Image 1 (cartoon, rainbow, N blue to C red):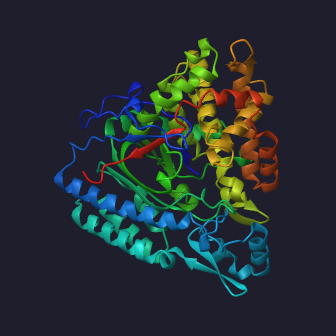
Image 2 (image 1 turned 180 degrees about the vertical axis):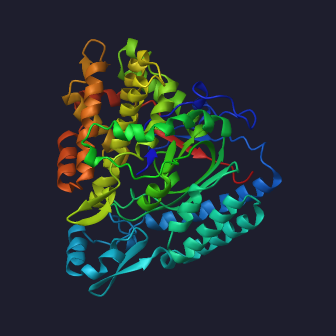
Image 3 (image 1 turned 60 degrees about the vertical axis):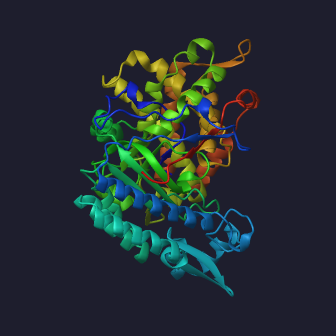
Length: 512
């Protein structure tokens, strides 16, 4: 839910040089192996590790092994119970339908919390459904991962990293992740930034409730992180500026919201499945977000590997020539950052039928897709707000909107069954209806109307946030059904993009 796939760039255009030494650039896309059947180009990822101490290298190598256990668990989660394919994958009994599950829960309200938990697998026992905790279902892999984290905790001399790794190891055994999520928000004084555990709910295509295991093992760049840090001070102002009634705004969340720019040195599980994320915004636990905010981590080497080989060529085929020339790395970077910042804005915990719940839970399987679309358009809306505040040049609005529009087509290529792809289709359909862009028949390209684009983005933020704030599941589904479609012109443009990789398939080193 809290990932950025749509926009990618090289951060050096907007931030200073790395303090930890010169970067080793990612291998250029031209050097990649030929595309696979899905259109993914294999890239050998390069990561600068020369600044790590011997202790830090030892910790990173243990975390790489732990990340591989997340992949082992995810391999089980993505395959349906019994081996048959289905939207419930490994989270629900084979052949179970959404209607059947919801009927059972309605008839057994006392079992609802366990069956709906993001940290259980649902199984059949005769006529009954039972909730098996992840700590039981994936015990062999989680025990190996926990032991590796405890070993790493024993090696590191950084107190905050030691605390997080120890608590996360305990969480793997207890199935309670709250304290370790709180500790993750407090990581400081180390270049090692690691997120590991069950996070996103995209893989649960039936209900969007069950979390998938994944890992991000990354190395932070303090100079680049600090250069972008100023924007988080505007979070409350951005909340106040949202184009909805104040009763739908959320001023309760914590304001820490650290920003990290990092190079990924290993991914695991859901992180390595399908389109590669270029940034993430965690944790997803709304209790933690209200207490401490959320951490935004931008993966700079993944960004760099995508821009020249994918995004810029797409812009040249999507936009008329004068507007294609406006697309730039600066605004791709800022859109990535503000996408993540926007995940921390708008409704979080909401009340539906007198009960407190999370907006994504209330919106079921459409919740994650809606949240990604919200972050996309709200991110652009907030960049425009920064222009109003004088933090960015207002004269560059055309660059912002051209870059954003080209980015829609990159995400749309993931398909309308993938969360980001369907979210991109929604943005295309809605903004088209608002006249935000027109088709130039002679050029066979689009032209963006900046004023109508700005107004359309404002209105789309309003439409999504209102449905999130009220937990309007039926309304959100209907909204997507109305607008989340690509027309014949968009499909024709997509046909011209076939020579461009859909995404990358990164290969990371086994150890440092």
